[in-house]
Image 1 (cartoon, protein in one colour):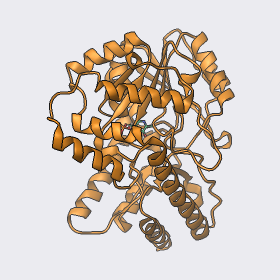
Image 2: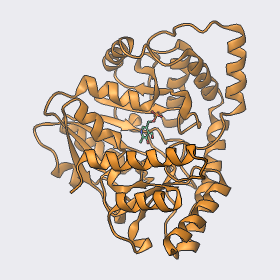
Image 3: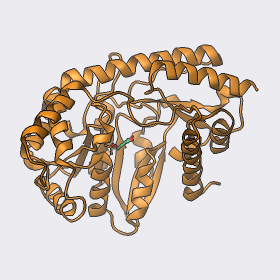
Length: 381
Ligand code: PLP
């Protein structure tokens, strides 16, 4: 069995080879990105340019600009029926740092952190940094990769401390209905767990699917993780938000004060512009990604005689290797695709499930089509 280190090194090796090939001037078909590949919205750029003309670029307040904290709490309250105040809100350098800071404060050696699998790669890694024990809760494709109340109950112990729920989900596009969410949160609450609800893809929800925030259902012992990265196509600006109980937000602010000091004020101006124009920008990102998703799935199913379903949310398709009639070692398979055909994908083993690979559909349409044709060619040769 692969250890975490070999899993991580397989993905790092694929990325390093992609970079090397790129430097050599070779064309890479990038299906591994976690970014919506889009320019920052003109309203964000204009607003930042205006602020840079008239304002000094100084240290921001540690918890974030006050008007940004206010705008962020108003946004989540209005969009997702929550009731956070400015004091419940922290601005941080991305959703990842929000999770890192919360885990640093909450996890003690030996604490069990419950993580539905497949999972976003960082959850177990961050857990281990703070000497916690990741407890993986299996989910299944037949159930659209959703955690069930039975599985959650079956994995509770007297060391269980935190449940990390990723809704909408990477790598599978899983999206929970309100009642499903309510059932899971009730069990977690009764077991005294703290819940980290990672909702960074909340605006990237397709067709007539609807997103529900955990923050609507639980107030205490719950931290909602949000971000401008995916929702507003702003990965490089590095702005995330934490919404939670005031005492935890205060402790996270103190931690931020002695670590990053908070994200750049320039990025905070950009986030403020994004929130002021959130409907327009989120609509643009969602509709562009939906077109790319549809093109990807239609082209893929035609080329590979497949029957992939369109994911309900996020930027990825989680594909069983059986479609390619290939060996089930996902790291080996992805390495081969990179070596032979310059195609970058992420092996399922990196997300905790063997026999799958994750392909992102967030690239420009012509890149998706060209890349899928290259994949077909590589698998035929
Ligand atoms: N959570 C999930 C599920 C993600 O996929 C990512 C990024 O890929 C993040 C959090 C972190 O995003 P950021 O730090 O850019 O806000």
